[in-house]
Length: 542
Image (cartoon, rainbow, N blue to C red; front, side):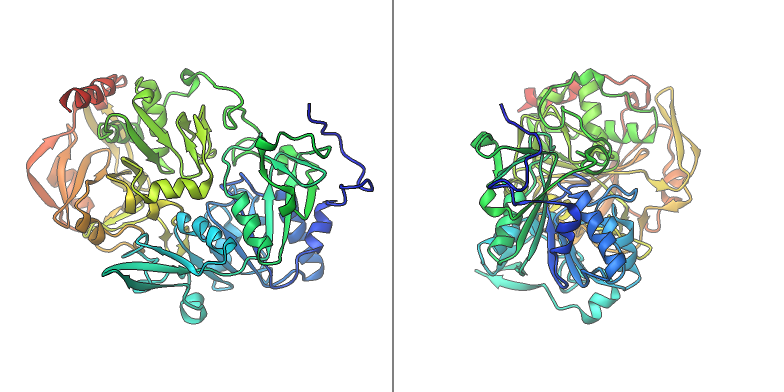
């Protein structure tokens, strides 16, 4: 049995234990600080708060570079947000900033330089930094805002004007790639559940495994310091070595969380859900029913594209509720749902617990998950769409000059065997319902989503057309496909008129299929119950 009482710091082996305030004082000006993170998972909140408070009181540490491989923060004042003070962080390298508005504000106001790279690229770079290799060669990002011929991943005007290039286009064996350069990381902030007096770290109450080993290795091999925040301290030698995810030889200092229920939360939404950490399996029937609205109609039509026995990724927003649809339709065992954070199997959770999985079969290290993804391991991806233009480009990363970030979107859309974009046809006020198997628009949205040119290219229709893989755009009233480089209308909902309900609400006129079909009317009834038969028929036809 593990003994987790607070040890006396004066005893041999426990000198690693320090306070959050002492940890903050160890961070030098100009450091490059990295944290494995997904929302609030993996984030050392008490240490981050101590860093922010020390800066406000002393002006130090200042001039930090923050490196985070995934979405960070909970949109409500926690996460790296607590360090979002002008002068404290002056450079950002990562995949997503939306959950930390204070950092996003500094970026949009050109008060810091910032680079947004695909999630898989960032977490893979950590391995290259640890091994002191020069960088990553990949096709991920070609043709998107990450491509240096477009924006080079630079998130604001200051970076475009003054920031050095961190990637470039190269030709290798006659093919075009992006090369992302490595850079030194000097401070690691890592979170776990239990550390022993020697610093060995376990993560039994965490959700995703993330990339703590990669971050710590990168920092230690660059002569930096590794700080871990945990809930419990165990006596040396009492942890099961197979449960240790980070060996103590890579840990310099341990901070014991004083207020774990507030500052050591498993996800953005909960302090602790044992189904997220694999400690229990909860009944799938306990998942809530979805409202009878436009999102349900979108999800039902999108779910019809599920191949049998598919490996699936679900994006945040409308798509992250598809797992609930699958569970209620009784088809969860006909597919394997995955998350880019490393969950395999079970039911991925939606926001505010995105990245978590109920009843997962396995938890894979974050970089290993992207090895699988980048190599084509996803059969079908269901992702959101902020804007779509006439070329089939999709924007989910920047709106009105406000930086959001791409997360794993670019990795997933580049390598998946097929992509289904899910979103409403218009936004800002849209209200619809279903009546007698027909879609009824109660109030039209005031903002168009199908526009002439997207603000930022997060998905390149041009590059996707070269690969000739299926690309769909599913809305509550219409289905479009990317065919021969053109956005093409292929299906409309019962009760919808193309000339009245579709074309006037687009900035461009799409190609219209000569074989324009009707979306099945069953989707627009309160009870559906057809998905099992649809997928089973695909098995029979193989």
